[in-house]
Length: 300
Image 1: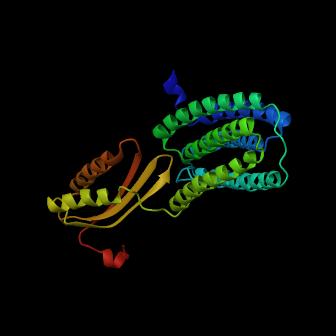
Image 2 (image 1 turned 90 degrees about the vertical axis):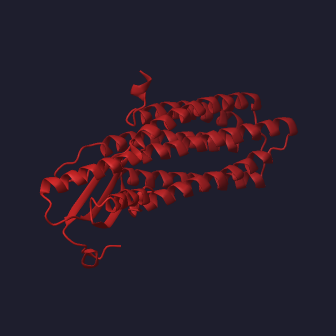
Image 3 (image 1 turned 30 degrees about the horizontal axis):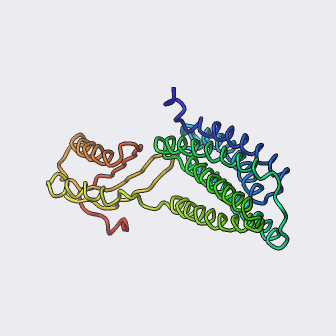
């Protein structure tokens, strides 16, 4: 039963249910207490809910098979969705920094501290369970959409923990300004994490080579050393999306080999390449050459 839930189609639905539940609790408590940290946490949960709903439709679309109009599949919808999510994170960060700055200048007392602390403890427990679940889904799917969702809920977890710390300090010391200062520290963490992910997203859009590129070279070189192929060139690798990796290369063969013999060699190479990451899908494309024409093709 649990294995059926480890599905990138189901994960955004579960995440949305958790997020809306937490958002309702936090908004009610914010209206009662007027804590800027609770406002930050409530807004974060509301955004997580909206993003998770958007992610559901993005995942559904990205998993559609190739068709006549989209022969290279629909996976890059993940990158569009990631752009929207990053914009949401950045916008909320700016808004909350402004609100916390106003509270630093004009501190206001926080009401219903004990209720707010209990709510944060509940949020921390529930969010931790959700992150554990999403990590399981990401390990199985390697979906960038799910990875962004994990960032959202990690952000939520740290915000909840920060809010709890702020409320405890205010409860025992009466220094209400701590509420706003804690958010500033959390804001720095949120921006650091989002910048790391946006860098990864940009590299994927620019078709950065796979981490396994050198391993693929080593496999091909072994076939050269074993004199199965004469040489290889024009090796290119990239991550397509939806846990799928693409490799293409030219291999130089003896001119008198049959098509079947050449195909059998490629088939063995393909199997060796796929062993590098058995959890991913691989597309291995090749071109046969009777001699090295890398200079003509302008290969890197």
